[in-house]
Amino acid sequence: MFGLAFRAEAQAPAVTAPEGAAVLEEALVRAIARAERSVVAIARVRREPPGERLVPELRPNPFGRVPAAPPKPTDPDFVPHEFATGTVIDARGLVLTVYHVLGEDSDYYITTPDRKVFRARIIGADPRSDLAVLAPDESSVPRPLAAEFPPIALGDASGLRRGQFVVALGNPYAIARDGQASASLGIVANLARKAPVVPDEADPTGKTTLHHFGTLIQTDAKLNLGTSGGPLVNLHGDMVGLTTSIPAVVGFEESAGYAIPVDATFRRVVDTLKSGREVDYGFLGIEPRNLAPEETSAGRQGIRVFRVVMGSPAHRQGIRPGDLVTRVNGIPIRDADGLVLHVGRLPAEAKVRLSVLRRDQPLEVDVELMKYRVRGKKIITTPAPGWRGMRVDFASAAEDPAHPGAVPAAIPDAVAVIEVEHGTPTWEAGIRPGMLISHVERAAVRTPRQFREAVANKAGPVRVQVTGEGGSVAGVERVIGPAG
Image (cartoon, rainbow, N blue to C red):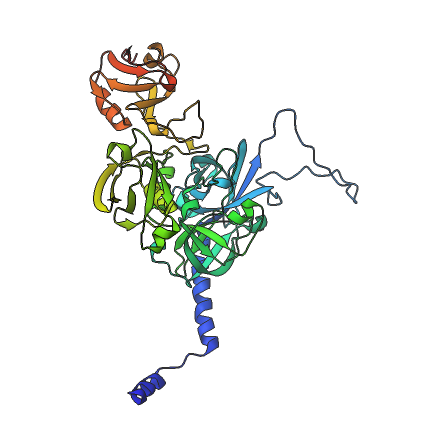
């Protein structure tokens, strides 16, 4: 047997090291050539505050000529102080980047691989996913758009394995500001990694994004400052991740680079941002705790329910403190971060099945999620439709003015009024942002969908039950007249 195996192996054609290197080299060249046409450089230019114009120092010209004015963002010599990378994801010229490169009072410019510069605007930005979508100024973009902005081919990160070759394309230190993306080769070092935690006063845990709970691809490809927002591609040139140079954001650089994986959550978020709509995330309403070491040593798996928010989906379905949650939709839960991640990836109103142990007795509990309150500024250019001058949302997503940033102690059986336009029938009825609506006529409403269904096709005056901001007024009936 050993002899036969040896002879079969000996008959296989030998591949020399130079030949193998040449095959890999050709694959890399082809992958970069396929993907680089969809990579743009992003320059962020802060607007000058009134009365605070900075006059740059102009060096004397040795030829006696008058010094030239500083270059404009559309000039090839312009070097931005803040820069990043973007990836074209749509034939309309939409560019995906990471949320954390955005800033207040700023203008954005994108430079394509053929060195054309276009002003861009934000059409959607979501701090929870750390993703944002920009659109070029259509008045300056020739037709067809697809010729200027060919979208990248999206791959699937679910099949990635450690050791696979990947290429990062980006704009490190703004050296690719001419639109010629720089490439960095590496491997997939690990999967499902957690972003570095950066605590602050608003969130002492420092876990502000889904990626702090274990979503990221780790790669040893070099990701310097400015590469955030560029694609991480496989050897076919398909994007399997969107790079995020988080260590540089934290204040230092290290060998570990990260990328947001192209998976079902990524696609859902990107599709929502492309339309300018708000991205929503599921809220279960429990405070999980990791198991004690002696429990895990004894073979226990899951998380212990420490607290249940009154009125939350978990409370409504009978989840109790002390319960052990072992699975979410059949996926094993190993720790508290895992529960937050698997619930948080789902949208509001998603149906979830929890596998629970209560006093060692197994239970299967079906829950419909509410909406998680996302911290940070969202940019929404296509808001949800209103009704007679107001917009409502889940009470679970509304900020409590008395306890900003805190997890609510209880979720009322109502929807929260989040916006009221001045002078509309709702405004004239005395309804203001922060109030809660529990009933439309006699129909109880606790989700925006239920509210929309309750007011649909109503042409005349409509009675609603309102409680004041913070619940200070109970059961006040207001009549909202028809729209003028």
